[in-house]
Image 1 (cartoon, rainbow, N blue to C red):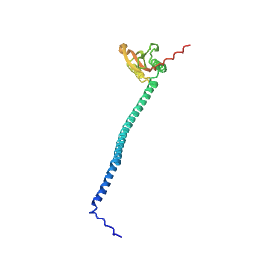
Image 2: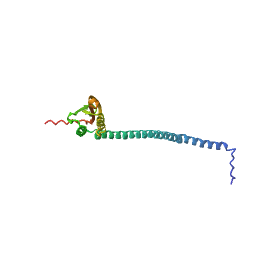
Image 3: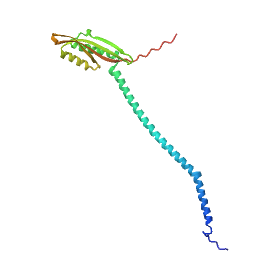
Image 4: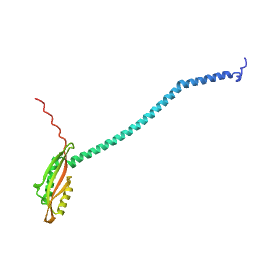
Amino acid sequence: MKPRRRFDLRENLWRVGAVLGGLLALNLAFYLFFNLPRLRALESLEDRRNTAARELRTTMTRVETIQRLVAQYDDQTRRLDDFYENLLGTQMDRMTTIQKEVRGIATEFHIDPEAIDYNPEEIQGAGLTLFQITIPLIGGYPNLRQFINRIESSKHLLIVDSVELTGAREGGAMLSLTIKISTVFHAPRQTAAPKPAPA
């Protein structure tokens, strides 16, 4: 039996180099054809994920802004509806009550209620009706001032538009005034009745 020949690195260096070169080439080919495309695909996927995350954050911010604006709009709409329905009301709901109140104040200050003039006028395009009240009044300054205070403190949104001096008596102790008062009614749009179907 022949003794086994020892491996001599110096004699077989080219073989070792060839084997290592082959392994290196194999690793390089594996990297270029398998790992590199996967790494590039992973980078592209991460870029798309980051872009989608940024777009999602922007969209969520816009949604929150829109939701806040919608909530503000709903709140203002409720307030406006409450103002029209409960504070202004319609002419049918409030006119009689206002006339009673004005007549009561006039009687308290010894004014003939029949001398009071009422004039409703629709404000075009606004959905409102302006209700003007003209009251002739005779009295002393403190009495007239108290009358005006009573009108302005009314819960029916009465506004003193003008106070016109028409004369004076007893050396100016008694004044004759014409006081114009106004308020506003909500005038909801009338929906047209459907036409009857032809027979």
